[in-house]
Image 1: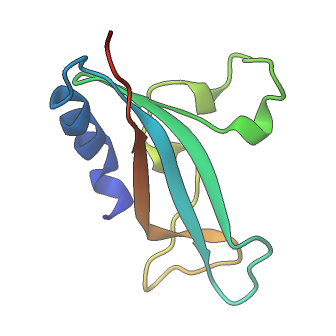
Image 2: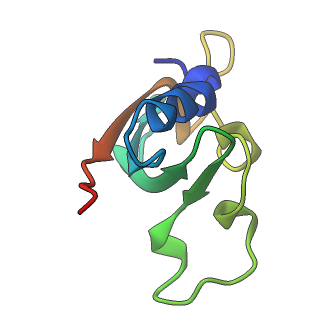
Length: 105
């Protein structure tokens, strides 16, 4: 899916869960001719009302007050390319999410 649809998709997924939560991973693929790293994965937490993203590579066990740990759109944090705007290490506009299944007991 396009990254611009991700927040709404994750909120809908959370709303469809029995506990109202969706937690999982987002896979971002890099594009361009000179890619240093092929992809990047971040964690998300969503409810029907909000989505938060966390880039674990930046934290090392400490959660500072950082824009990557707040409600936002991915484009607030990462650069995405399109057919007219591909630069070194921009991310593809196509992203994938993988929810972690949580069971309520």
